[in-house]
Image (cartoon, rainbow over all chains, first blue to last red):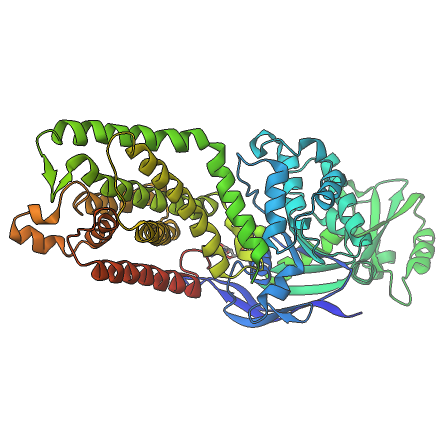
Length: 308
Length: 253
Ligand SMILES: Nc1ncnc2c1ncn2[C@@H]1O[C@H](COP(=O)(O)OP(=O)(O)OP(=O)(O)O)[C@@H](O)[C@H]1O
Ligand SMILES: [Mg+2]
């Protein structure tokens, strides 16, 4: 598939010398959902701001749909919708009016039918004449989305769309994102929540201290890097791993009630069969056996710690 | 050219104005009436005429200029400062609009509001004095140019300001004194010679003088000089704005 967004070697040094992005390169394919994960201050917002034109890059280049974001800024920006991290809205404006403004700004003719569809999709239609200040936080965030969608962009940036949003609304938000993907919109979202990336992303990028540490298909990432743990619950607690099992690299759980074996699902041999045989040979009573997949969160924490 | 964007900005800004239309309409009417009561009647009864024009009529061009300049500046500076303050400027920066289009939208709206207020004062003045207009075309032209150039100045102030105090500072410390000392309520020829020279450094003098010429056919400075001065001022503002957008001064990091 063709890449709709291509970031090459972008770096950013803010006034004062802070290097927020260090030679970031990234290719986004049309129609995918990419989740950018990263701790506070990693440079997620800076990267988005450069692509969208709010921050000047210190070096490197960005192309959107083949158009350079500086030389060809009009063509590039027409393709982009942005939902910023902060809720930036004029409190006294009315919902429909501010969405209409956004559409005009992007050079599209006024089309109230189109805006009605968008507002209905975001459950905002009955609030169309309300002032922004009369809305709840979650509604305000949806107004930001409506503004970003008002000009029918092909790429949508969502900078922490679910920060400070309750579980219910977060699920709604994911539903909206999935719907947009079905409509063919490419989505790049940033988040601190691993489960969010797990739930909706096709690919996951991890960024920390201005560098992209990894970018991979979510499923591949999880099966490739995801280790599994096998827990053998024992009939009687142990003080230490028996010598007969020492070569299996086991750990004893707290209280000695179970043995924990960590293995790689992608490996040719997991070693489970031998382990279980050896456990039986050692005369241990097995009460239960369970396995657990390590989550994206474990991977993420591991990566960021390694880089730190 | 993104005409839809210019229209969107212009309409959005004007809707703010229409929401407070009564206020926008009443306040210049009241302040003009007050000026006529104080200057025209109280002082004017002692000053028979200035250069053959009744004092009441003489102050009208200055009065219009005073309001137009302050309104154009205030509206334009607020218009662009507010999105900066609210953070909504992200939208302008990420939209497919050129800086030229942004300026046309905001400055156009601010100039329109100032023009509206200038017109209200012009009409109100007719209730108090006989007001001949010797050169109607020149009057309109001067009025338009003043609205435009001071809206440009206001735009610069709005970009430059980092808080509300700074937003008020320039209008308060620079524009109001310059306008008051610029011959709004007197003829420069009434000043002692030394002050006449000093006054010539005040750009507003040229605007008011030119505008007054459009009404009464007499002026403190030659009309060509007035025109040149306002062109120079507009040009300077445009240069600064061009530089602001080229460098992203105070809007882009
Ligand atoms: N305008 C600015 N001037 C100077 N430094 C800045 C500016 N904007 C961001 N930074 C710095 O750049 C770094 C990256 O910030 P950025 O906002 O991109 O992080 P982020 O990944 O979006 O974090 P968060 O998850 O908290 O939103 C931070 O160290 C921040 O302090
Ligand atoms: Mg951020």
